[in-house]
Image (cartoon, rainbow, N blue to C red):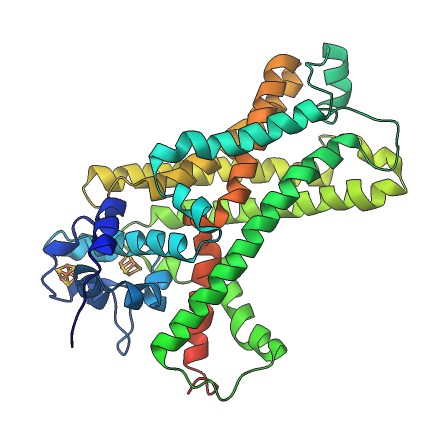
Length: 394
Ligand code: SF4
Ligand code: SF4
């Protein structure tokens, strides 16, 4: 075999947390230690040598790279301190940039040096929207007590559609749309690379319904249940943080959908629905519980990551910390804005609410290029794993 190492790729991996990969001497202890590795398709030993050899094409088309939960069992057992779990994390971070669209935005998300731009993009867009709304103001205590943040972007007399909703939808929906389109393009490209690499039979293809019921739905259920994640034996705290975080996102997603339905559809007929939710509204209760679960989950992950780094079992990388900071910012500003509303502090409340909008937009916009992307890419890899074993592929 004639190996043509991609030196630039090796350099990128080293910078992204894979700096220990050259220590690997191929003993395969990691493949034995990994709770997800199977006898017929073991990993991560082979990924370690592919990384050393700079075999980019093999690695970004390798579903095992995306199946890894970065639990650290292999890293704990590696006799050479090669940190295979971290190397796989670095490969995933490279893959998210590689599959990301538009590539300029994907590249921006790879370095802490770009943080001012990453924060600046949503910060400026929302500031411009606030300016264009003609409602750049700090409300009086009375206004704040009665409307909360419902009139952040002002108020108009057109009772069928609230001005605030109009402006929030105007920047959040395109941000979510770009992220969804980018994730779709990335998943498509990744599936093709994995299929080509595995030389699957393409003669027989399932119908969309068959694909959804036989491969996609079981993978989604597996992701939600965290079955494989629970197999981790060393860093068990991660699953304790990951689960509440996932349920928090599901809860907040339900509340956001209800909010859109309430304001944009039902609100057209019952205009009173445009008022702020009361504290005993079931959706408000779900939102508050989700916010607490979000903060608890991210605190556990923060602690677990810091602990791993202190023990020398994980590398300090922008890829890992950016998502933790982003989620923390969403939780702290969201809960902070609500507490400030109860405390009746309009100026501080409006500033924190603005920061909340910025952090939520960052989470949406950068989803396909950050660690958050594992939601779609890991689910795709699980789906591919089931598909390649099926009669269709064989
Ligand atoms: S990463 Fe460590 S455990 Fe795995 S093969 Fe290399 S030296 Fe062995
Ligand atoms: S980090 Fe965990 S899941 Fe990933 S390869 Fe190592 S042992 Fe397996």
